[in-house]
Image (tube, rainbow, N blue to C red; front, top):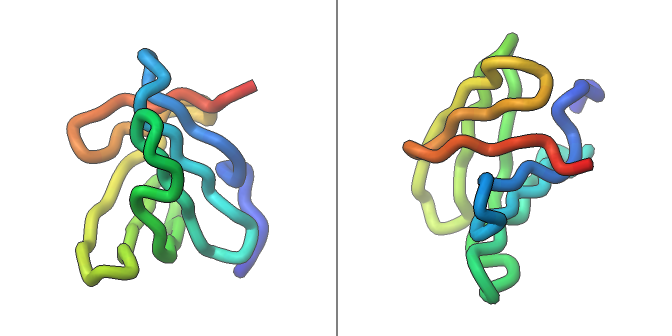
Length: 80
């Protein structure tokens, strides 16, 4: 996968959902105290991200800026 600027940790404002976009095209999402609640692969095309969860669920999201991601009705911020 081609390296892109969105690799890294993304977190909701309350910190409940944490999604790490890994450089190998995989993601790992934690929810609350549940680590690795969701895992799968992703692809970024322009400012859009497409997810394929290992269980077969599909979703998408949009990077509205380099530090803000809208996905699944949630707003994620790039973790520092």
